[in-house]
Image (tube, rainbow, N blue to C red; front, side, top):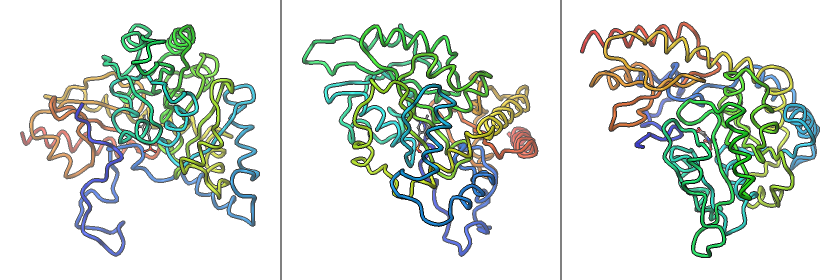
Length: 371
Ligand SMILES: Cc1ncc(COP(=O)(O)O)c(C=O)c1O
C-alpha cells in the first residue's frame, strides 16, 4: 500500500502572519476531505475546556473530570472498566499492546492496520513488539485470516502470537459487525490470545451499525480498546479502555514510561466526558457518516469516477480519470490512497456541511469536463 500517511504534514505554505489568512495557499484554512483530523474542535468541547479551566485541580489524573470519565466509560462499556486517558492514538495503541503482551509476544493484524502502516514502527521500536500482518480484501480480519499468522506457539524461534488487533472502523472505511468481532474474540481466546480494538473511529462504527459502543466491544469479547476522540471533534484526547482487567498489566507505569501521562489530565478527560456524557459522540459521527454517503451519492454516475469500496462510515475511496485528482487537489485537499492504482480517499468530519460536499462534487464535475 502506498498510502500517504494522513498524519504527515503537507508541504508547508510560506509563513504568514496569520495562517488563517494565508491567501497564497489556496486550500489553507478551507474545508478539506483529507482527514477527519483536519477538522477543528467542536464548539461544545471548547466550552467544556473553558469550564474545566477554573481553579486548581489535582494533577496526573486525580481530578474530578477524570473521575467522571471513569463513570461515563463504565456506563458505555458496562462494568467497572479501567480508563487511561492519553494524548494520541498511536500512544493508545502502543500502550494497549504493551500492556497485553510479554516481551516475546506478537500481534496479528491486517496489513492495512494503522499500527503497521502509519505509526512509524512505534509498536516495534517503542514497545519492541513484533507485528504479524495479514493481507485482507477489505481491511477486516476473519478467524481464517488470523490463522495465517497465528501458529508456532511453544516454538522458541517464533515470536509468540498472543494478540489479535483489529481496527473499527477499518482503515478502508469498513465495519466489523458485532457477530464478526465475537467470532474473532472467541477464536483468539480459544488459542490463548487477546483481542485489541483500535477505535480511532469507534463512534463512526457505532453510528454506522446503529448499536451501542458495547455491542462490538465488551459484549463481543474485546479485551482492550484504544478509544478515539480526536477524529470526532476533540482537540486531542484518546484513551486506553481496559475491558478485561485480567488481560492487561502495568498500564499506569507504562503510560508514564511512554510519556503519555498528562499532568493536567483534566483537560483531556473533560474533552472525553463532553463527547460521551450526552450524545455528542453519536451526533457528530452520524453527521460525518451521512456526509460521506452524500458524497458517494453525489459522485456516483459522474463519468469515469468509480467508488471502489463500500461506504460504511465517513470515508469514500474512489478512482478518477488520469490527472483529475491533481487538478481537484488545487481546490480541496485530499490524499492518494494507492498511487499505483490511482485510488484516492475522501474523509468527512463532524463539521463537513452539505454545502461543502456539494461544492466538492461540483468542482469534481468541472475538472472531469476539462479532461
Ligand atoms: C485507525 C487509526 N488508528 C490510530 C490512529 C492514530 O492517531 P494519532 O495520529 O493520534 O497517533 C489513526 C490516525 O490517523 C488512525 O487512523
